[in-house]
Amino acid sequence: MLALVDLNGWKLDQLKAVGPQLRIVLRSRIIRNDLRPMSRLSEPELAKEYGVSRQPVREAFITLVNEGLLEVRPQRGTFVRRIDFEAVLNARFVREAVEADIVRKLAATGNSDLISDLRAQIKLQKSVPEGSPERFIELDERFHITLARAAGFAKAWDYLEVIKSQMDRVRFITFEEFQISKLIDQHEKIVDFIEQKTVLRAEEAMRSHLREILNSLPRVQDLYPDYFENSRDISGEI
Amino acid sequence: MLALVDLNGWKLDQLKAVGPQLRIVLRSRIIRNDLRPMSRLSEPELAKEYGVSRQPVREAFITLVNEGLLEVRPQRGTFVRRIDFEAVLNARFVREAVEADIVRKLAATGNSDLISDLRAQIKLQKSVPEGSPERFIELDERFHITLARAAGFAKAWDYLEVIKSQMDRVRFITFEEFQISKLIDQHEKIVDFIEQKTVLRAEEAMRSHLREILNSLPRVQDLYPDYFENSRDISGEI
DNA sequence: ACTTGCATACTTCCATACAAGTCAACACTT
DNA sequence: AAGTGTTGACTTGTATGGAAGTATGCAAGT
Figure 1 (tube, chains in turn blue, yellow, brown, orange):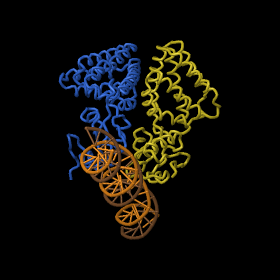
Figure 2: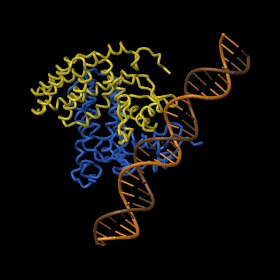
Figure 3: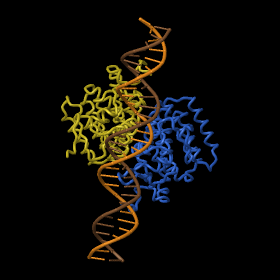
Figure 4: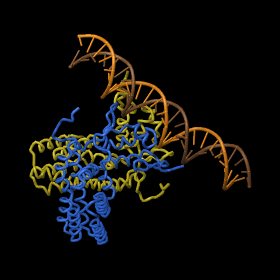
């Protein structure tokens, strides 16, 4: 018997519980804008698509609703939520606050192993060809996780992950918008200041790094107004 | 027909969707230590208790697992998770970071309406009799929400709420441990510094206020070692 | 032409049945 | 008496059927 069902490039392991797997798959598809805002996701349709029953699909929906990625309107349908401008701003704020404190702590204590690890990661980041931002996003993720772990707050990053999805959706839409090299420079500065143990500078470097999305956000919203929930136009009212 | 089913003091509105209601009820019961750590929650049992089928119960379970309050071991049972010491520390860290930034922003801008609102709330807090900490926790919650809202980050508080449940469980266990008057004094200082627009002092006041739980945590863990996941004993290994 | 009413085909939500794993008690063998 | 195998009553995971609400297209009336 085949343990793996491959559909749309996403595989499902039929031996483990299906619900949680679907949650991850759908979550990823939404964040990566494979499932577009406003598009409809019907339970029976997805169930058929993945070769399972409606119940696990439904359970995946529930968690995605809690993460603000789906909206289920009873007896009407389930839809991919448009990006909530407010949610993005709030998520960014939370993330800045937390990561600023993480960097603070790191710069105060200092750790040479950490520094060399980070430097190696930055070298990797520089090796990413300009044309493949997906790879960079992956490395960027790893960079920030490393900081959180080193500060002794790995779980705090887990909390952030849920929040961060709101920001990531924007990143995956804009993609070519952000200049990788600029972000890498900022990473470098953060590491520099941590190494020098200049707490305030390190903190400020992280803060401005995480404020970067604020620059692209208005442009993105202009380019893809339909993807956003709180656009100026109110045409989308029911 | 009766729209309300009252069981164990928790009411269920049969007209709205049952799943989300159960989520709230069970969440509350866990945080308030009505459902104790390690205790077993079987789906059919709760279903019967609330007069619904297993499915909504199950859906409530899923979100509570995501919040780290339940643990479901397939084919074995569903259990109230013990309090994860690490999770508490991480949650506290995140909360301090976020609320520090909130206070920072408030102290920088200033708002007289906010100040008088907060002062009124503090007056209310003072009127709480020493013997009823539940009421104080409620007011404390409101105090912090007010700050978040005023800073324009209401949604950030929603995120915190999920995280905060880990801390709240500790609070509801220790209960008489913390001295209300001390906390109120800290509230007062926070408001004072916001009013005076002394940003650093306000921030520091909030930080030390939120560090308060660190004082009681070791004592609580000593008093109720069975309630914690990362106690020194490793007997609970599977 | 335009509105109104209804039939139909959807949707989610809940209830129920079945499948598969786990655990404990008990009978049986050694 | 100690160990082993089996049975049966549990658990959660999945599948499926029905209930209630919603949108849509069409026919009939104004």
